[in-house]
Picture 1 (cartoon, rainbow, N blue to C red):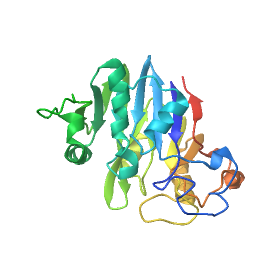
Picture 2: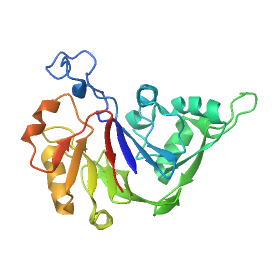
Picture 3: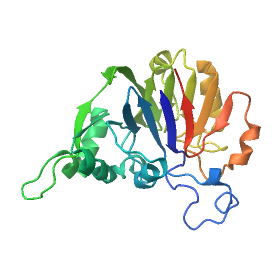
Length: 252
């Protein structure tokens, strides 16, 4: 299984519009962060996690040729507003792509992007996505996908476990039943927004504490703001790293 962090930035991206802070004007490529998204490839299939606002840029950068399925974590704009960029893949392979999300997330997507899911008379556009509501583990292309309910402030988002890997973006707490679903991980990518606290996201210390509870040997912090320079990764304890766009992992 190959995992690629397409984007590791928070909702504003980095650099942030109008900002001249040291990170936003940094010359390091690892301080350039598109909005959070993930690509998982296994068994000759490609799964996208979230259609970030920067999906087109990410797909061109990583030379993505097709998307076989989409997993949505939640319906916040930075995680879904690139949904229309799936049209390019549809034009090439003429297939309706299955997507998977909670009932609440699908409801928001179908309301805001109805043309993506339904053919409207006279529009000339065919549906791009077929929706599948999930609230329990399901099989996809020969691998079990486990949705992980998370608290994102006062709302619920989904993380996903695939084999010994889990992706937990946009979360401020992991409920006890979800902790049980995350035992025995080899690799964790988790929300670690910034050094200071935030009501809807783990800060770096919160992410470290959560990962240590899970006893994960390698943890990558994502959804990073412009308040964190990649060079500050040396401040993290052993077993923890800052994410960067195009970061890749291989798991058996």
